[in-house]
Length: 195
Image (tube, helix red, strand yellow):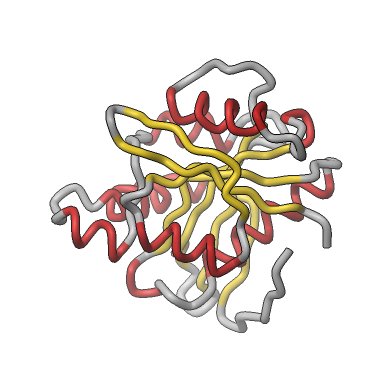
């Protein structure tokens, strides 16, 4: 997949109920609702709106393959990043972004939906951007996937989000498909989970 270097001041773990308010703040800031399209493209952004109740339901789900990983700053005991994960649907159903991922996986000759995890949204506080935290969270989710005999992790990225697309390209993600939602194009990217 991709190599990792240790980050002395940070660790990564599965999100817990005590993290919910931090996650809400991180996602709200990362949505960049007041930024221009150019700023959103260059700085990255998360799409969609997940409220506190939705986050709680997601991370407290009674499933080892549905939850979120958080980046924890050991220096001040704060949560500075989050990335959600869940199974890829085996049927083309659910919200449009989920359908787009499911269709790209279904169309792929190399990926079986039963053996794949979807990840995202992914967000890191701006002040910690560029330190490899996103890469570590994706790698953590790949580890969760491997632990449950999943061969791939997949995500959708709005094409306007040049920062995220660039990061995924830099990490070696393979583009396996695309779709449109409300007239906006998205790419579906994948990593193999093999160590």
